[in-house]
Length: 287
Image (cartoon, rainbow, N blue to C red; front, top):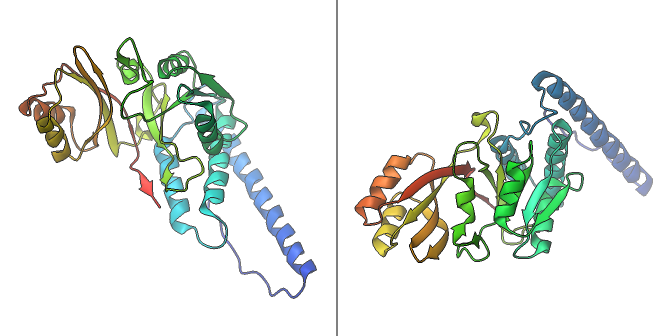
């Protein structure tokens, strides 16, 4: 739907200004009601009310990018982004009710802030003690989401030397569908970087594959392997060192195939014992 603005008439007194604000407020409310009627028709057409198929992470990332690009004026971007996130998440919830499960092993406050900023207060918030508990809660659900913070050193993310990302390996297992916040900036009010996981989307085309994530295990991780990954414009997102080697979560651009990644690491002396795609997300948009 297209939002349009019209030039404000010349106003000379406080009463006229307040009346204009009231008019704008009424129009915004009417537009939200109109948006809701369209969602009601979407539910009838798509029959999404009983599953998590309403999630469109690629579309959401594009919408938030457009919000940031067109924003101007006195109102802080934080406020505009927060309003849009609540609108998007709430209407998604109306289409297909879901909860957000959060790993609070590193503290509840930042995860609660991230959940409430990005999904609003209508969507239920479910805290869990570990990332793996979040993954299992999502796996057992019909359409819930899970979030956990990015932890490059892996601390707090392992149980018996099993990195959390290995809980996403396998057909039918939950997968990463987004990285939040969609709009990154140093002063973001919910700036803790988190991954969002869900059960496999009904429509794979709804995923955004700017960055693809791979779980791997290697016996050794030397500078040559790090350089080989950098040559592919990839990065180590998280790692968990154990007595038998390194568990790594790698991110590479969507145009890099698993075969290319495997061959590059093998040539660099870090032949993967395993290499499994565990999700993807949109490119980070910085302001």
